[in-house]
Image (cartoon, rainbow, N blue to C red; front, side, top):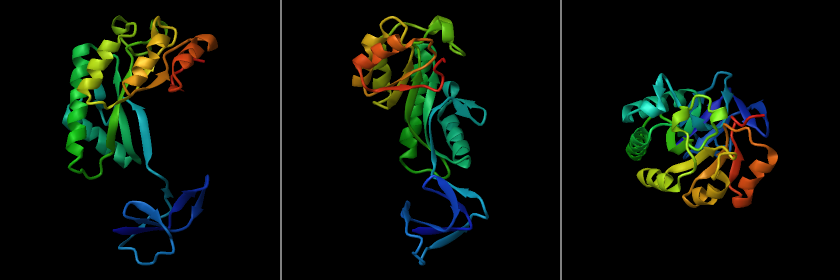
Length: 221
């Protein structure tokens, strides 16, 4: 199956240019291929790669923390209409019971999408925002649920997720976080710094325990 996209502004090498684009078996093919099965007229719209959203709490009126499988499907459909082709569901710091429930619903949706779904962004996994965050920078996080690192709790979450928790946001200044980084990465999680007022030295302690660190968009300045 191949599709020729015509009359679009194609993103290429950092700029937009008016040229045809051919997709063959889901991959970009040579625009010289004249034998496309279908032709799609972009009518002057921008043609860009699908976006990947790794930090989002929902969409279309649905909150990830409260979503059932139907809710996850609704979020995915909305993202697809906006150009996002895959995403991670970000679970806000919550009770253990609600976090496990949300993880289970996300896994159900991942299983269901293996059978294929039209016009729906693929759920690639889960992002945990907390609960190992600094109260001073809690934002929307319920302060009474913020705790020090608990690797046994994370193991339980990762087991429930069938290994699909892809990354977690933590605050370096919370006692025990730097020392727990390796345990988190050993569980298959990338670690992000966020909801934090940590200085350079404190943040660098995390790097001493793992190279798998990235800075969240919510890192304090």
